[in-house]
Length: 214
Image 1: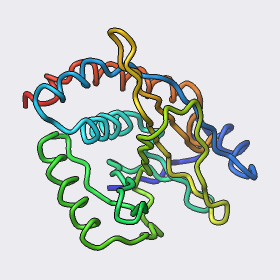
Image 2 (image 1 turned 180 degrees about the vertical axis):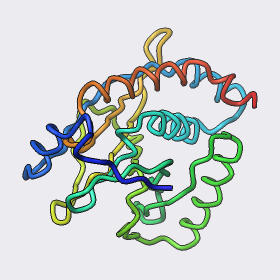
Image 3 (image 1 turned 180 degrees about the horizontal axis):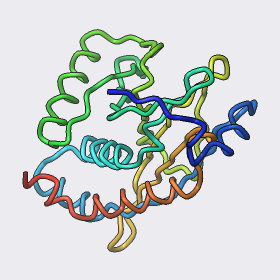
């Protein structure tokens, strides 16, 4: 389901008008998130840490309306729900894009992701998401613990899909620090919304037992 935003009454109208025509309107914030509870929980129960982080990422981003908004020419629409499009490693050290469906039930979400990953591994390809702006672009870079990331974007037509990325976690005494990056279009969101995202992500992932109890 999609609803069109009434720009005349929209609280972000001034920011939208100011940033929409920038040559590079995206901003990016990177931080370390302590995922110690989720790390140990998934290790103890042989659960995929990647899929757990993927689920928490989508659960979090869907809870913030600004990250479900997309620019379409001179209008703005808000999706009721957005879904992940994430990178999957394939043979010859290459990657493919993988589209899966979000589900609020983590067990169904895992099944959706597993089916989508297997389909891509069976038939690797680079997929164009033209016309599918109900996605969030996601990548995992497990080989390095980064301090910043820049993603490629389309300038013409406008690309307002958020990007999420995380890297190699670092174990330090009792903490497990995950480098995590959020990139989005400044006409649709700003630092306040990025702060909401990171704070809610931390809150959700520190209680992994509640995620899997349903």
